[in-house]
Amino acid sequence: MFNGWLIKFGNVILPNSFILADGWESTPNQRVELDAYRDANVLLHRETSENFKTYLTLNIRPMDLAEMTAFKNVLGLATLEITSKRERRLMVTYWNDEELEYKAAVMYMPDVTYSIHTVNEATNDIEYNPFSIELIEY
Image (cartoon, rainbow, N blue to C red; front, side, top):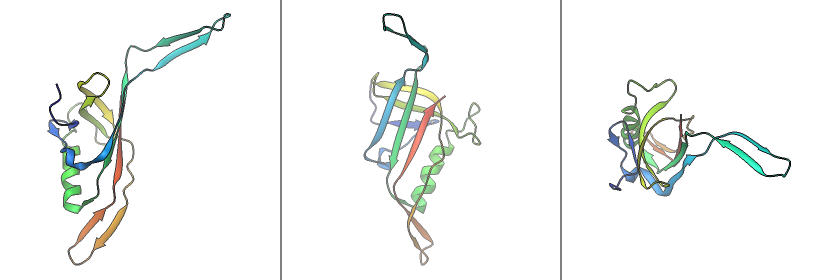
């Protein structure tokens, strides 16, 4: 059953308002091919792992420094005993679009590129442009 949210880091739901409209992209349950070959009749034979992996992209909206701090705090709360900050390994619960249910997974987050739209010296604030976060299941 869908509960109105798309992703949770640790035990904290990421508010949908952080994600741009059309900003959720998922490739759930990717099949991992262990071996494949064609026989003498040119028929394809595939050996596929029983473990499926999910790949998510979250396109995040523009935000100011205070919002970015709140966003980073949500990500930080996903660092549990089984996760690693150094490896950006996170405990995530996400909406699996193939199975139409929530799934929990350990995922890692590759490097993120941030770009700044403006810096306001008078208010000591930063306006960040939209950016993307990728999450890849272990």
